Image (cartoon, rainbow, N blue to C red; front, side):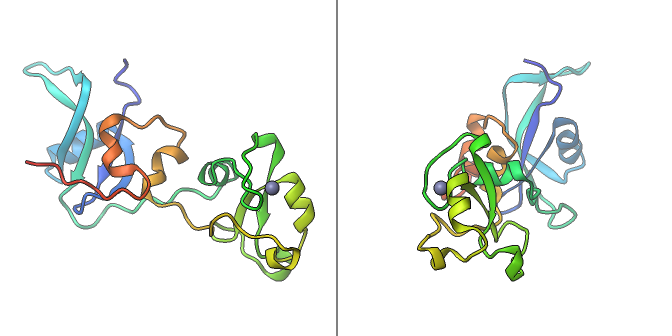
Length: 180
Ligand SMILES: [Zn+2]
C-alpha cells in the first residue's frame, strides 16, 4: 500500500467529521500541536531517520478556528451520490445514464439551483413532472433535499471508508469519543 495519496479524516473538537485532507497536512497539524492523533493507519508508517512515526488516519483539531467546515461541491455527480442514484420521486435506483437532475421548484418559478432544490430523478418522472410542483402532479419526494452533512464525506468523494473512520462518518450514528 502506498503512502502517497493517503487521506486523513479531520474531526473538530467535538469529534464531528469536518474534512478530509492529505496525510502531509495532517502531520503538520499534529506537529504544530493544532491537532491530536485519534487513530493511526493500521499498516503504514512514515519512514523517518530516527524512529517509527505512525501515519495518521483520524486526527482531532485542538484549535477552534481557522479550519473551514467542509461543504461538498454542488455538482451533478455529488447530487447522484447524495441521492444514491435513486429517483427521488419513484424511489427506484438507476444507472447514471437513466437519471437526470430535477428542480423541485422549477427554474421557471424561480426555483434555486442548489442542494435544497435539486434532486436525482429518473427520465420518466422527469418527463411526468416537467415544470410543475410535485404535488401538482401527485408526486412526492422520497426525502427532503438538503446539503449533505459531514457523514457523507466519504461517499461524496467516492472513497472506500477506512474502518476506523466509521464511528465518525456514518449516517445518523453519534460520534463516539474514544477512551484515552
Ligand atoms: Zn422516477
